[in-house]
Length: 310
Picture 1: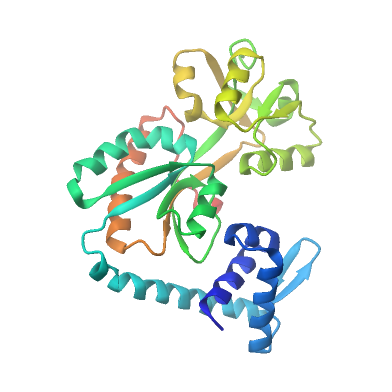
Picture 2: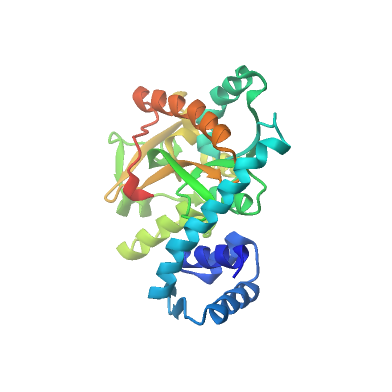
């Protein structure tokens, strides 16, 4: 048994899917399956059982998740314990950010980091949450600010805040005297949404299917094109409040919180296991006060994190 096989197994077991794990790990499904078959053959036990919706762990598999996670954490700690000997002054962090958290936090976070002198140097990369997690798995990022990260062995998740999703559209399209809109009424609004693989879209599709709500939508990924469609072509979108904060302040668009059910997501700081404990602590110490100030301000509707959503 080697660390790669252990990491592969824990990722598949926690995600409950070879397909999802292969994407996260950036390997082919056959290669992933082959490594796990070698692991089972070596241990002479069945660790995973396939079923129609993915895989489930056996009793032996559940035991290996527990002991294997501790082993991976111990290995990562061993690496961190000697890392400063090779790079004594290195505090460079590659930070991935999803668009909305980045827009809200980066304008203040980056000057704070610069003010820390040569202690911390942040290099920013923007992307969608699933793309950022993939990049962390490939060790291209040290940390990320993203939505609803999965539970994976190579990362530590620090929940920061929860936020609701809103129906946002140009005035006269999504406007109403009521500042909320029930989910079932979304069928009344032409929508422009991300592609089906994106987490928000998957959440919307799942609820729409369960409620038998038919949505009038087109799919657009580029943010600038989507914004143009919303502002000038009569369609609305479903996003966090902060993504259109300037337009809302200027009364160029209207935002209505979606209810029944309300759509809520958790934003977390995700830290790669290779990041030193001191550097991770410094980054968290810079971000948390910014988040608390926005929560207390109330404009963005952020709330303290509900750990049950992680």
